[in-house]
Image (tube, rainbow, N blue to C red; front, side, top):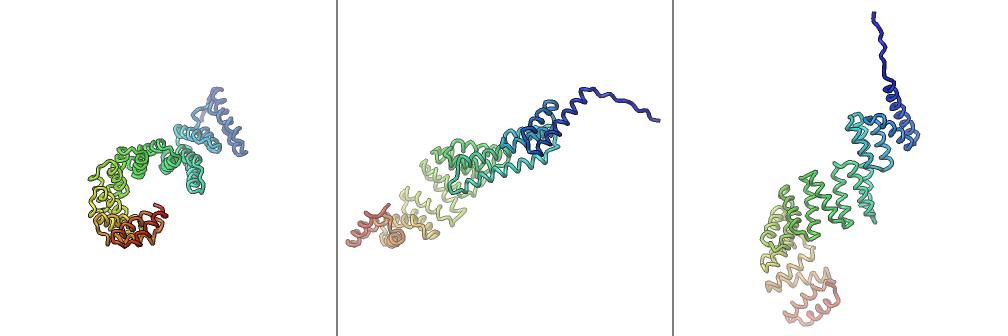
Length: 336
């Protein structure tokens, strides 16, 4: 025969449990009735009784999200998870939803005909608040800051990305571009060098690094970078074209001619390559090679005054007086 025993529960504990349960129940009812402020008041009262209630924190986070108070939402969600994992799945879904909402609105502004740059930046900033680990929003935030000419802020954002993802080559590339834009050449070179340590075949970084070396008068290093870029991608007319400029700067006209010739072979329609090849032929006193290039350019790009001036000079040397006069006259009416 079993003996029943009465278990005495202190009245205070019964009252606490009852208050907490009543507050949560009332809050859920208010939420179903779409009365978030009344629900919030009930949940805050429940937390005064039991501060470590994970559901109350979770529900307060949901309310904050609907009211676009995203930082507060995150704080409530994180506190709920600190207490226990009960609402982990729901919180993950909520954060994904709001991240996608904010991120996509930011992307929408980037593709707009007349984007609101301040709104774009704010959408991406809020997306980083909701899910700090999603680097896409950070990258777009930096881009928005750049578009608003907030260069130092963009630099700091890229550095934050690299703190989280030290092997993110695109951020090093963007850092290099930003530093270069501000004439911070040493820092730009450092960014590209770190990128190349991660990806030695990144031709964009090699080319940009070479441009910086030229500005720093480090011409042998610039040549080495351009040649490495060509070795990786021999069909890049841009690399041949840039190398031609470097040789022209060094007055190595034979090497410049070969580089510009390669650029023309790879991109016959690129008028600057053809013009620079013609000018190099002139520097080498090979007027017969320069003349057909310039005559063709005068047809393809008749508004370029520099083409007509060089034609006028060659015609004058060849005693083609009328053609020389006509070319100089065209140069006077054409642009540069």
